[in-house]
Image (cartoon, rainbow, N blue to C red; front, side):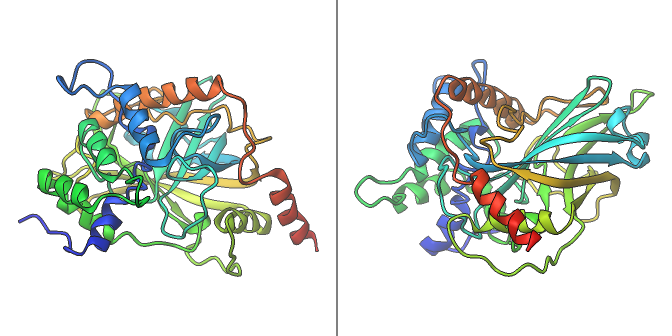
Length: 361
């Protein structure tokens, strides 16, 4: 039987509030084509729904609005090349431009410890190939489709009178989507680490790896931190998580292992709200190293859209409808913010420069 969520309104809002999941992959689930007639979901309706939750903030990403740029490299170990012809999985090093961010469309939000965190990565090969990743520190998506995601945004839209979601609307969403109870339970149990630097980031969506003989393997992947207990003094304030990340990088380069999980017989490939078996085979594909952090005012990540469908040969999309929707909405979000004046981000060069001076002293 599906596991039921606790009935208290607080617990309900915690999993829907992974309503930071308007947040989640915000620009998230737009759909091109006529999928959901007569209530069609489009780039416009999806972004409008997101802005209905977090408001309009010109010049910023429509989701994951608060973030910083990072750079480093990825070094494949050759092990996963048995499953894919991708050159990124061979034993070689390629440069990386990345971005750590908090979910949601509010660029000046405070760094609440439980806020969903994301990591965007752009791996670039000397051969001109590129692999972009948009990964998050939650175990599953809260919904299965773009239609459900848009319905979730409407359910958690703040009531102008209270500034909070209407509990009746939240309960109505739950009642209309009982099959999502298992996703809510998984999100409610999500472990929360002390910062960006020791968190695990997951693809959530499934992808297909193709080997030289044309054999296809369905996988999900994650970046698993080298250090799970980073001894950095606790920080407080609106930018505490980003300042902690700056301190961690100033101390030494940070590393994550790329781990592929191979779909087992009972795993559902095209539904990102479903967890996979804990008994699935896992393969380590290489090491991600991050050694530099910059504000978005000056960093190289500002003009990059971390579209998960920018993939190299040897890696392709599964049939998960969320993937196509994310790609379409990310492009629309980028087009809109590109036409708007560039704003001043919450984490400025001065903030990060202070951390460098702290290291030197």
